[in-house]
Image (cartoon, rainbow, N blue to C red; front, side, top):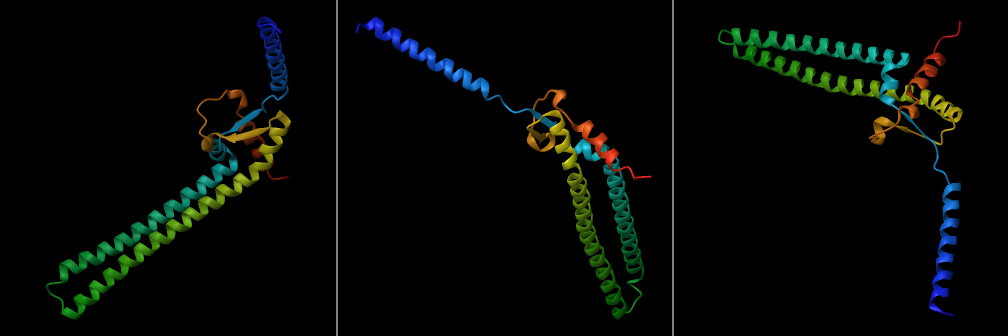
Length: 181
């Protein structure tokens, strides 16, 4: 067999292989992708707005309670500073103990309140997220999506707005949470 014939056969086999590989690649189309913005869904859904309001109320109560404790500490310190020169040593020690006790109470309250607030926030977010998952799944099936990614957590750099299902999910979630009359 001469060199030209071998080259011709090799090229023919190569082209056949490429055509075969190309048809296989075309038959394996990538899945359809949808995106959801979990932060927007949480912040703009009716339940999310209620949760944010609840968190803001809790935060304000904590601030007020801490401000009240700060006021009590400041009052005790002022009383201590203005009277320490005229008081007996035993009374001065009692006042110092009372100031330290109040400062410890404030510190413990702040730590406990912070933990409670974080737990409440996590519980509210998880409840809403768990309630939205079936709606996201239903919406994905209706749109023929194979995968839905969270824009907040996935590191999406660019996307076409046509793949964003956030507003549709929020609308369906709000409708699902309307009390039956």
